[in-house]
Image (cartoon, rainbow, N blue to C red; front, side, top):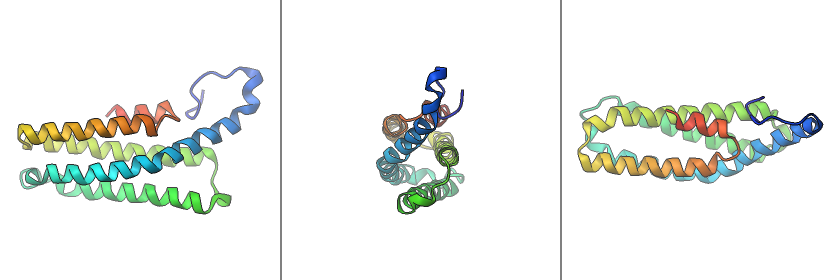
Length: 156
């Protein structure tokens, strides 16, 4: 078992594994373009929702810049791969970079929830939960190429 293809593979199909890994990683990156755009919009919306709680919860001041920087780095990496496709690193390296970016994004979203919800009123907390549900739905579609990436994104 490997992280890109967690399902057992028959011995006669092992010759197809390199192409399968490449196709799965390409699908992750292809789907993530739209997902990152949606996540950026929802991040701005979440920042507006928790604007009043920033005064009461100091940790929110640095979480949104870290989340924004993560999104920008992920978008830059996707743009780099699209532009310089001949210099692509291996599928395993691209997978690990994708996994690191999505896990860091997930960690930021968890911290936003943990810090902001106690400082929000009921309406703002409900709106934040609706934004998180939209992010989860987008992630389900965008990370369909790898159940492991999706699980690591959603578990926190």
